[in-house]
Amino acid sequence: MSQFVFKMPDLGEGTVDAEIVAWHARPGDTVAEDQLMVEVMTDKAAVEVPAPVSGRVVSINGVPGDKIAVGSPLIVFEIGDAAGAAPAASAPTASAQNANAGTTSTPASAPTSMASTPASTAPRADTAAAPTTVRTGRVMASPADRRRAREAGIDLATVAGSGPGGRIVRADLDLALSKPSAASRDAQDAGPATTEIKVIGLRRLIAERMSEAKRNIPHFAYVEEVDVTELESLRAHLNANRAPDASSMSLLPLVVAALPRVLESFPQCNVLYDAARGVLVRHRAAHIGIATQTPDGLKVPVVRDAQRLSVWEIAAEIRRLAERARSNKASREELSGSTITVTSLGKLGGIASTPIINAPEVAIIGLNKAVERPMVHQGAIAVRRIMNLSSSFDHRFVDGYDAAAMIQALKELLEHPALIFIPKVKSP
Image (cartoon, rainbow, N blue to C red; front, side, top):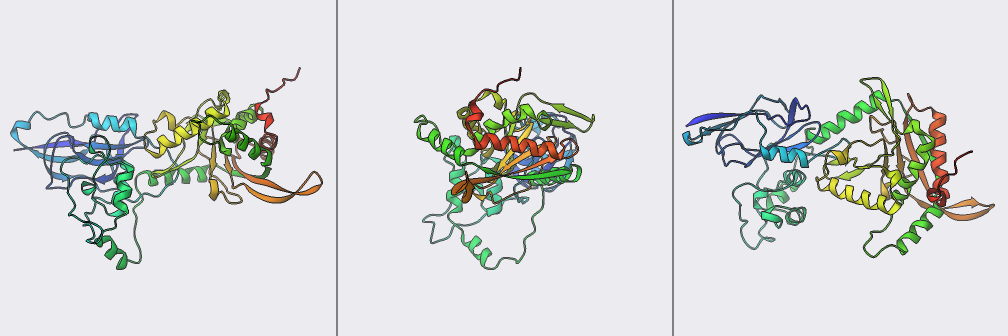
């Protein structure tokens, strides 16, 4: 028997360290090659790291929340003499590279609670007709579903997977969660009055970047009331005449379609600030970030070159990107490069909000809830549909007057939506 020291692999993109998110093996466990060992997170991606060899785990380095430098010992294995030709300890495995390419995150917000190992629970006698079968070998599931299972105290080895190759999909976990165990019921009845949740992984990254943005950027907030009665009428008309295979249109794609027209007149708001060089990078194209709530946090997929897309193309792209972000399939390119962000709380939109700028951008626009209210319209009281736009600007680079003027220009387009689609007439 001999020992093999597996070091934290180089996960690319200039990574110097990675944070331990969750361990899936403990000292004393016997593991097979390619079995999932640990989930780690870099500033760019969440990565599942498999075992490079088969053997017994002698020791592990770090607990969830710890950062391990690239090249530092991560796991010590005891392997048989026949397995002496072990791979280079510091080289990333193919599985880790694939996970790095396919599981990418950007900052925003969402709760995440990690534990060092998942807890096993037994099914309740009144909800399970037969004993749970525990699978052996590697359990295939997305990082998001692994987190949900840990937080719920569910051992994924006891969950039957309906995906390809027995992979556990969201519906499988939903079914398992709908059948609470006796242990979880007893824990709820006699649980502690408080629970400590370590801030790690995406939540830690979100917290750091949000704090940095709020600390370093002097936010100028501006809220304007918009009469979206005509815009809502257009939306209803588009939905009534949409293609049979097209999804319904919301107000968000219409706002995104109007925004490039406004940015043509306010290019100082379509800017990225390179703090390291002290340079404002002004963009001609409108790459619109769409703040999207996901199980892993608030991610910002990007509708690129929105000025070139029709409103239906924008709606389809928002839907596609949101689905990829929520399923943890969005690529790094799809989650980076926005020049201005739009955020919407949908039915929870409230009256007003103060969105935090998605640095290094200099502006963000929030859509609040649209409600019907009695208003004075053309000299008479009428019921109109009203929605507030809540915006924030980096006051270092966007003057208050220009910020207000930009929102007023956007308001004009939304209140007279035909202007969104009519080509601008250039001055002679």
